[in-house]
Amino acid sequence: MQYILAINEGQNSSLLLYDFSYKKIVFAAQEERFNKIKEYIGFPELTLNYVVQKYRLSNSNILCICLSDLIIPNFSNKDFLKSYDFYSTSILQDFFNLKLNYAIRKIFKLKPYSKLKKFFNFLKFLSIKKSKTNKNYSTILKNYDLHNCKIIRTKHHLNHAAAAYYGCAQNENDEHLVFTLDGGGDGDCSNIYIAKNNKMCLLAKSPVGNSLGNIYSRVTFLLGMQPHSHEYKLMGMAPYANPNYIEDICEKFFSYLDLDENNPLEFKRKISEETYKILPRLLDDFKMCRFDNLCGGLQLYTYIIIVE
Image 1: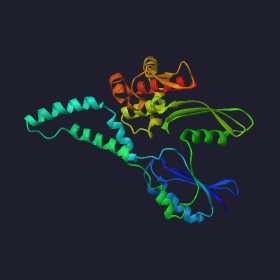
Image 2: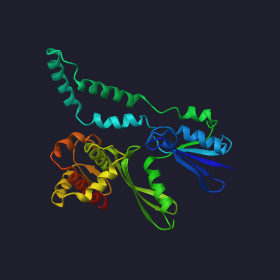
Image 3: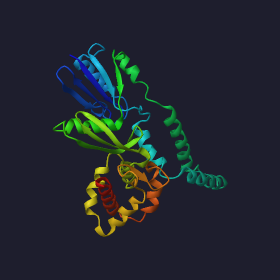
Image 4: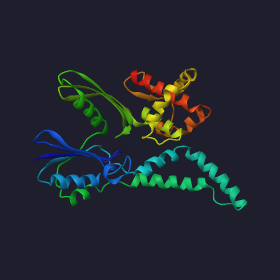
């Protein structure tokens, strides 16, 4: 038997084993099934341990190992969700608030202000994000006698597009339009391809700073829910919105992000900050907005811009 081992180290960490001899998938599972950590980010070591033993994998029967991103994830689930708190206010605003509160509390001998801890945690977060890397995959593979296997890294959005085209195309000789869209991966938030005859031609891409997905996830956080997990709740709430209010909310989102006039296959920001830093703007613009109307306006905006 000859196998291809496919590994996703990012969110919803997972592993797939493809039997190259019989041209079929023989195993696929997410790491959370083994370690019980929902939406786990990191190398799926427990899943690898299971599949190595079950199928007796080694250097001799693995044709190659495919890793799903060009950039190795360098943060945990906890770090990832913390970033939403860190970007909920501007660093400059926090800094001046800290100086004022520190002076007041020092005069009156009060306990340190909680934002001081938050500010230093933010600095710590930045240093971790820059220095901490998930380099242990080579060590893990060596422990399972897989370190001499050929390793291929493929681009995040190309993988999304390939899954759609090769998984859904009924006739590979026909032209297919393939559109990917998410929060971001390997520097992009969207790719558009024309696929035909088992080949994919990239037409356009949008950088992660212009991510529609990041706007959606930040609104999810704004409404007190867990981003990258509870977005479906906003979708479910959207039909209950008052139609008299959602068009104005929709227009406000278009003032953040729209299609590029010079290339309408790409997203273009109308605001200065990247969309993953948009929380302070959302808090200011929608502080008097009902939650259901906000969901309805966001969903209308998302629908219109994607269809366009």
